[in-house]
Structure formats: C-alpha cells, structure tokens
Amino acid sequence: MALVLNNQKTLKTLLHVNYYEGLGRLPGLFKLAALNGCDGVELRGFNKFEESEEKYLAIIEELKQKYPQFELTFGYPIDYMKDDDADRIAADEEKFYKRLQWAKEKCGSKLFNFFTGGLYGKNTQYREYYRNGSAAAREEHYERAAAGLHRVNAELTRLDMRIALETHNCYLHDLPYPCSKLLKMADADRVGVNYDHGNMFINPNGPQTINEVFDILKGKIFYAHLKNMIRTYDYKYAGCLLEQGNINTMRVVNLLRNELPDGIMAIEFPSSGDSIIAAKRDMEYIRFIQDWLCNNQY
Image (cartoon, rainbow, N blue to C red):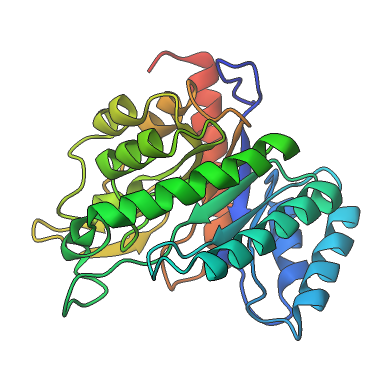
C-alpha cells in the first residue's frame, strides 16, 4: 500500500545506483529497480564507466523511454571549497545548468542530489569524519557555498526544480547544524537537504537522535537516502541490510511524511555484499513499513 504524505503526494522509492553499478550495467540497474517495484533510480550526474559522456546520456534517455514511469534523480557536484576562482566556478555552474535542462527535458527530473565540494582538515584521513567536512570549515567556505547556491537558485526556480545537499561525510553539509547555517546564508528556497542518517550516524559529531535531525531541518528535507549501519561504541561500523542495523528506519519514514516536497526518497546499499538480493530485501522492508504506517499509528 502506498504511503500518502501530508502534502498529498504518494511516497516513491528510488533505487540508488550503488546496488548495481559498473561498466555496461545501466540497463541491468533499471531492470533490477523494475523487478523489485521501485519507482525509479538515482544515477551519477557524470559518466563514471561508459565510453563517453554523450553515450552515457544517450543510454539514460533510451532507458527513460523504456521505463517512462520511472522518476530519475542525479547526483551532481560543484566544488565551492577548492578556491574562489570566479571564472572556474561560473563555468562549472553553466555546465550544471545545462545538465539540469537536459534532465528536465529528457528525463522529467524534478530534483538533483547535490554536493558543494570535499572539505578536509589538515593531515587527516578520509574516515576521520569528526575532523573533516564542517569540522574543518572556515567562514569563507560557508560564504562561497552560500553565494553559489543563491545563484543556482535562480535557474532552479526557472526550471521548477530543486536540489538537495546530501548529509555526507567530508562535505560542509555533513550534519544538521552546518546544513541549517548554510541554507540560511544561501537564502535559496529551491535548495534543501538530502537527509542520510546513515552518514551522520557514523560521525562522532553527529546528532544523537533521529528526532533531533527533523527538529533542526524541519521544512528543508527535500530528499532522503535510506540505508542502515551497525555501529560499535567506539564508532567502528559496518553497512548492512536496511532491516538490520541500529537506525530505526520506521521512525525515519514516519517523520518524512511532513517533508519531501517532491515525494521521493531512495534506498542505498552501504555494503560490499550481495547487492542484488539486498535490493529485493530492502524494497520488501520498505513496502512493509509503508503498509504498517498506512494502517497503524507509530
């Protein structure tokens, strides 16, 4: 049974590309999504495996025609952290506008998952999340990202599209409070957050509860990635199936009823295990959650 959100949209679940990613695998990814009753897929904004960017986009267009009912979203970065080179940033923004236009016209896309560039502390390792991302940010990083997002907002408004900043480790927008600060500075109504509790859960600086995230980001959660993690007391962790782990996915989905203006979220696979069976099991779990929430209080 489909879950109806408080904005009267029916909740749709996309399959993240990391369930079936690799050279020549795009048709298989779409087939895997269809077999398991997903409502679409999330893809990379840039070609990662195909022979050329043109071929990559052509394959996606062909697959959209084969699966016209699918919602398609794309992950896309503009690096505002690296420097303040105005010419470089302007050129990157123009490329992004062209990709937005293509996605709108050829794929019917409403939303992009967005990144503002990796940010690392001095002499840190990638997995030292508590020292990277917002922990390494200076005010100039917020200012550059906010100014860029404010500019991008005008094109998003013209196209009637949105972007969602993924709460991802080693980015400025890794945790709720930095996201909230950045969005307030950007003053961009078409820019929100892609809430990924799995990423925040493994950061020692992260929020203590799911409710805390929703309190901080209320009204700005435009998209969500659902995955689960098993975490030990010293923040060692392992990815697992959505039905396993320490994150209460039922609570997350229940609270998402008041968010998601486009009505879409995605399941994501954080493990190196069997992603094919994981797609089946994770979608079965999502259907159970939706059925439960449709018929019971939580």
